[in-house]
Image (tube, rainbow, N blue to C red):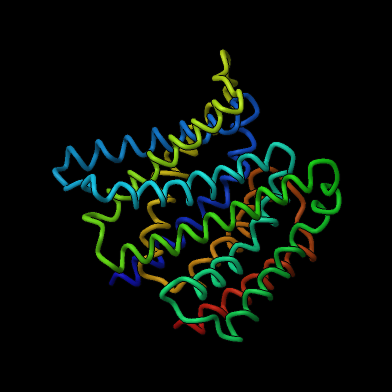
Length: 294
């Protein structure tokens, strides 16, 4: 039953996080990036903490906060914050491609410091096939976008991948050692602590809350809080406890496929044979890795 729920959670985060690259891009049109990201996670975490408190659930004890701060810094502060920072100079489509190497980081770090097994040849082939499909999907956008700001965006996205992958493996280990009273209550504290770190970094870098926020940015901001943070991040942390790392990490590939199809359906963006082939190749890679894990 938990495996079925984990795959449902995986499907939800594939769908929702396929839209958040664009959501971030729109939100930072009139809101400074790190303050936007920080307030987003603080609000989401606070809402969940209040919810669990009112429901009578036990919240994590103070002796667990060090572990929760570590997860918040790695997953939210670095993993999400660096992507938001990169989208100042890198188009959302290119950012999605640069982050699409994350499955390799996740599998590699899990093999080095995690409790999981080293990746098999079939898993590596599946990951490579999926990445080739991602490149086919967005190759024209990447050729046009490589230029000024590319390398700073590249470094930021790879830092995000390292932080996210390390944080995911660390969170998985803590859950296996039964340190959390309630997984989603712990997730709420991760969000809150990670948001505090992002706000602090934004203030240190001189960011200030804007006097005027456009309607577009405000809608995107609230979408990121409710769907990108409360719903999808909670789904990610649940799936992380019940699915193999190699399978879970494929949400990055599915995000890009979904983003392309949404662009075609909702924004009238073109869809051609190359993009169709890329989507098919991505799904083939996902199938290879998923079959390996059962």
